[in-house]
Amino acid sequence: DGKRHGLGEVLWAPASGGGTWRGRWVEGRWVATPPAAPRCEVRGPGLARATAGATARLTLITRDKAGQACLVGGAAVAGWLVPGPLLTAAEAGEAVAGGGGLSPSTSLPGALALDFEDVGDGTYALSYTPSLAGEACLVLALGGALLADAPYAVLVSPGPPTARACRACLEGGAGEAGGEAEDSAAALVTAWVDVWDAHGNVADPDEAIAATDGVLRLGG
Image (tube, rainbow, N blue to C red; front, top):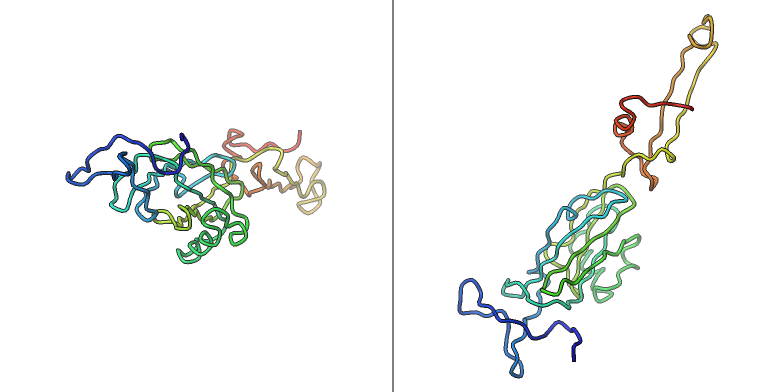
């Protein structure tokens, strides 16, 4: 009927060892075996690191219980980035199982849902764009079961400094240094800059200095 439900006609292919096939016959058609959550594989830089305001990307490769790559899409895949320390597998598993792996928002407060693209060949393109810097936990699920080695610890770095989010402060002026300065230009002035990114995270001041050729220009 053209609808995708995890099974469908595919080209059969032998496993690398031979003798075992990536599928089974059902009513005269060769269909792919369903993915097994613990055997799936996740790759990509977004598995461990991300930057606030930037999109992190991953690739999910679904595999059946024999460890062979699935040949079709349509799996009920979901994932979330949860701010805070790494959850235990038991904590993450309980959270996703409560909502059938699809809606753990009540047990994972602040969770950011990942975007998924079903490529159609058993692989999925995953992405997320965090806004909060710091420790985070990546939870991936297939139905009510954790995928691969989830949960994963992710470190989200602050984004680049944003001028409108920074604040320059001055202290001192005429009368400092014992009050004997001949004019205000000779007075001791202390200056500092609070640096944030566009999402309100404390940014790296070294990046701000590099962005201004080594000089933080205060005032107009």
